Length: 401
Image (cartoon, rainbow, N blue to C red; front, side):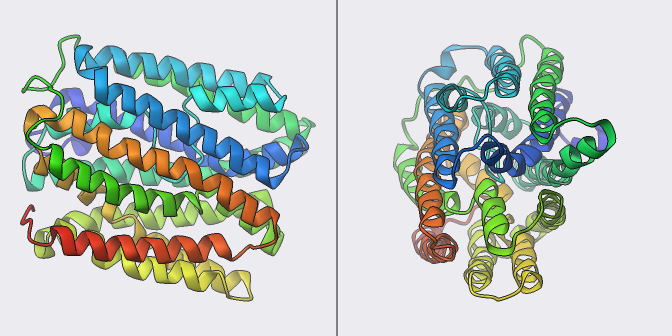
């Protein structure tokens, strides 16, 4: 298994990062589905779901900004170990706390992820390390494996979102108690991730000493601004809000929603295998844009269909196409900047994305609360298409493959 995860030329120190990504994706997968159900079970409303989702993303953005600004002063291994301990504390606090304001505080400072992708402080630290373990096509393949593991285990996690209903029937636990147990399990996974990161050699670090942004500042700023638009749009339909949409639009059960996100995640995972091959043929930017636009069209159409079957079909097509830009985007950023600026570039392109995505869940929750169930899906699709067209026009001449 370990040999399969590491591409030719890869570093043996990469496997704990890949294993940690898989475990984090698994618990993120079920937390994104459980979070709205948990808050509704506690007596909170749809707007509260959006507010708390915003807090999680905003906190992650600020933590990522701190890593980009000052993280180069510290050993990456120590930062990763600290993030794993924060994950442990986040899960345990959510399992033991029911009052809204403490939950909001924990969501802000912790590592909870209500979205389908990784928006945590782990991201820039891991990306910078992964970028040192391959060049050119090998680097794109490594990021594809990283994204594949994330998508695959997030799908399995979404399937596990139905576990509380099984626990209620099998053990007599209350629904609330069963969901709190799942948050406790999230914290325990943080402890396992901490043990994994301890296996990283103490001296592990980039081959080129990390430095603040300098030579590559211009391209990073342009990319960050565009990625922010994309993430703001995506924040309108993060998994937690899509689960809420299913609950309100089609009265879907928690188990059925988990099944949908499982199959959707499997389709996203399969696309990660296709992305490097497609990028070799048509380039990184073309792969990002020409797969993203049809996915956005499917999302817009899903807002209008009358049946759950048609909605599922369109959203499954979207899942197959919409995540091909994840490994190609990461590879493009790492190729477009100097080696020493990679950690800073990963942080400063991730921060505007997280900040932008942090604003939109509250807007999406408010639209749902006002009865405008189609509006978040339409707005997301339109904004993403606009982002894709501007990105292609601005960077189509960059022949990075």
